Length: 278
Image 1 (tube, helix red, strand yellow):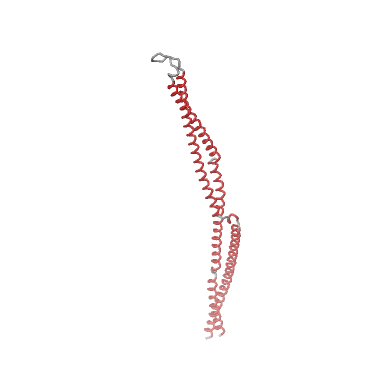
Image 2 (cartoon, helix red, strand yellow):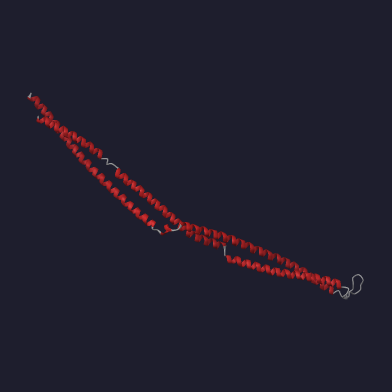
């Protein structure tokens, strides 16, 4: 009976020592896991702080963008000014083209009158020469009867030739006057065209003025886009912080499992010790 009792005690003691060894291992495991859990928490806190610093920098960038004077421009007014410039250029081009056509029309009129005047002057010289020729026939023999012409014989012919020459001369005088008026009109039209200026110069000026205004609109648009991108990035980083804060440590479950194992071992050890005492 004594030997059986000693054998039982020996078995209990072995089990107790094994359980104590296992408990030591569990304690070390818990310590290691808790250290890793603290490191995880510290890294998460540092990462959250880093992202928060980035958000602060982004907010400063946003404030800087919002204070940019290009963002406070009246875009509607600027676009209206651009439209006004474009409309003015269109009106100028139309006016200048119309003036150019008028100059060409006046020049064509001058050219036509010069041709008419040249023809009329030639005809007038012929009529005047014919009138003189009638007067020069006085005293010369008639081609049919041989009787010398007297002034009375040539009265009707002289009257007709004189009237014809007078009409031709008047036509020349009228055409000269018309030509003078036409040349003056052409000169005035040409001066008016010249005073309007060159189309290419107007286009260049319009482009320069419009480009300056369009640059303002472009800068404002770029600033708004950059502010939107900053807002999007801030939102993304805030979500990242929320995700980090809500993320559970991967060591929590392992620590809990080790604690359960520790409790089981402690219970077993206590039970073994009670048996050994008994």
